[in-house]
Image (cartoon, rainbow, N blue to C red; front, side, top):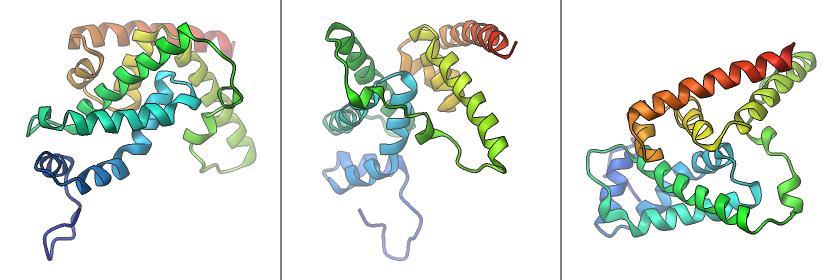
Length: 194
């Protein structure tokens, strides 16, 4: 997808969606290039097993393409895209719950893939890694609705209203879930540091 001559600024998500709705399939490639890694990180944070993340992410972009005419101009793409990814991710989790199996891929840890690689010293890196691992474990142990609210608001930086769209609930429910999640995280992290 090329910009108009003389224009070097990247096209906005909304402009790319408009182009996609108008039949420019190259806009999908641009959107995938921009959103593939954020969608995969979101799915991992929701608890989708690493072995399933690639398939769910691909399905997300297939669904984006299929539903492109339903995207409303003037709306932000991120909440809409994460809604699709979240729904497909929850479906994958439910399916895996009904069809359990052990996988070598599932046994691998993905925490390092999302961690910050800029450490001052090995001791600082070890301490940060241990703290990050404790926080990831505490977030992962939250009940699904609470974990999803934390992921959307705290990690994906969505507003309560945008998170409500992604999670299919009210903004007040998101606020309530965050409150309960923060209480549970304080308790869990307080116990682990004691």
